Image (cartoon, rainbow, N blue to C red; front, side, top):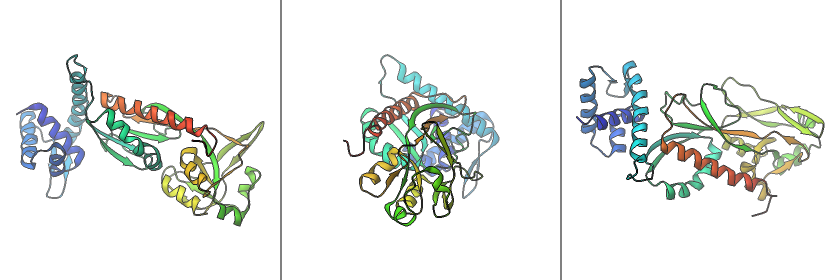
Length: 310
């Protein structure tokens, strides 16, 4: 038994949730993957996986072995890639989760540049705004806006997103254009609320204009936990939005959204890449994080330009 192949096969089965899917990603037969895992269990003299006809679940011993195996395989990649005579291009599979608007509008369109530099990295990207269990779901890193609720994660701040207030022309024709943030609390105004987590309420927005401050929560008829759906609701005229510039830019250029209260300042939203504590940061994860920093720096410079500038 090749211990490296067996360990790799086991890790893929845990992450894929099935022997068939793991075999597909490894370009092996299902029988070969099954045999490798069985040989690994025989050598360790423990059961790593519980198998039924419908699913594969990791045992307590298997979960502990998986965490150390992932770290060891990542370190092994670094050792091989770090040798003077080895190819300098990092390789392997990355599981990441990013906010859906950031994936749609920024990261996915930039991926051809990433793959031109790193053709041997395979990215398994989840596009969501939900809270992700990085360890339980075997995710290498998440990208999230706002302050991180889980202080145990290791994180790198990769950008500060400029925020603005926007509404659709149809909404403004119906409710009027506010001249002051506090007007958004009036009965005839509505905001589209964003649900940051299942148990969170609507967070107020702090706005400043010189020495004056206003804390605005507003009234809502709709609360959404997905960024793309939140944006679509605003474009449909369902209420006022607080948006990062990158989400509003194209809709503002087409006249679908109108900026409001432009004399008022909103603190930028921090954007973080976070990964599990004590997890070895492999070379492929390092270059992915550095790439996000570069992408966001270029998009931030575009946001600093006036609307309509190239």
